[in-house]
Length: 349
Image (cartoon, rainbow, N blue to C red):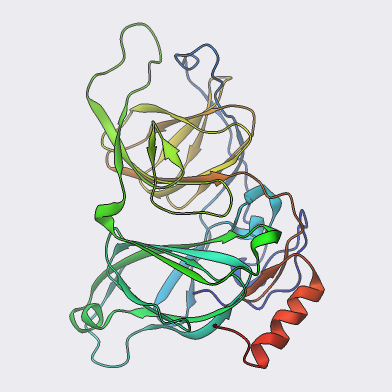
């Protein structure tokens, strides 16, 4: 969906993709607050600490249908987010009925990565150059592999456009390992009913027994949690969980591979992420907590009822990142070749 006009970005560079960054630094580290919480119930497990808080970013329009926060700001396209590259979130927005052309983004190319689109409210209609055509409805996920090259378009669906209503969605870019960048384009339509959900219980944070009633749930889109595996097929280890906490003040422990990057995005509500040192870092709406790879449990405490977060991460690829506009490769020469291939019509097969 996203078409950027940024310049070459190499791994660990601090250069930003200009379409995703408002003027000035959007990064801030919030002061920790002490809380008397114990370690995870298993003595062999360690809580991850927070490396940095990325505050909510200003919104901009992608096409005329997606009013998004560029969530990763100038951490986008860096190894700190690997294997993820970029994250756009369109918060709930009311669109009036539209009898004209549906709003969205017309045909544009991609190469070298995957796009993951999650619909929360409203509908997105997708069509691409290899023959896929689909409508993504609330709860559905579209996992598209651009690979060696694809051309696609994304609009509000015809039905949603005619009726109007609340629209909310997000799109993530997931990097492909170097050996898979020129793989055949692919498409995984994952409907809501095929995304498994697991109950989440309150963590034991002091004396007494753990609660027996669930305090939330997690939809497992990719990776696994508590033995439940998500339906998405990935080219490298990736976790993507849609977590809801029903009540204020509930603390949950989410096991997470220690060697993986992990970030927590607050879609709705507010949370604290609590580290092994019992310090809690506050994360507000549309903000992100980047965690250190120093533990195998992410501890989250809800700051209000009906809080919704996306917990995401994966094994860092540890490969050079070269990104320009809709192409993400490993070298500048490969970016130039992608431009030539697109100009000469060698995409979309």
